[in-house]
Image 1: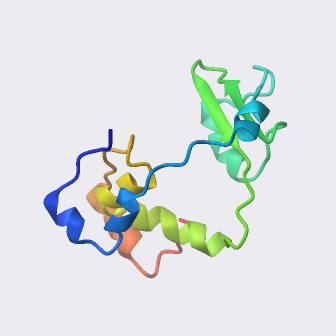
Image 2 (image 1 turned 60 degrees about the vertical axis):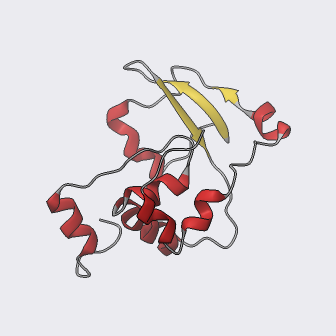
Length: 129
């Protein structure tokens, strides 16, 4: 069941993406998911390393040292540039519906405080920040 949305969200140019169904992962992808070891796992406090270091398996889940699980997947996205990703993060966080279209079955809300919103909209702040 999809996340409920506001009536005004249906008038947004990107509403059509909400209507799309999420594709079921291919069996080969699911079969390739590995269980990482606790020794390989990051501490939740070191999660930023995921941006600069690859974990041993391409797609795996790892027990976190503090408890819980980390699911990591290194997926090649042909044609996607770093600038596209840096644009996406502030763009989707400015409107809960934008977050919802990312995963309409699970993403209910995203919110920025006033300071975060101002930074996301400030053209002088590099998107990487």
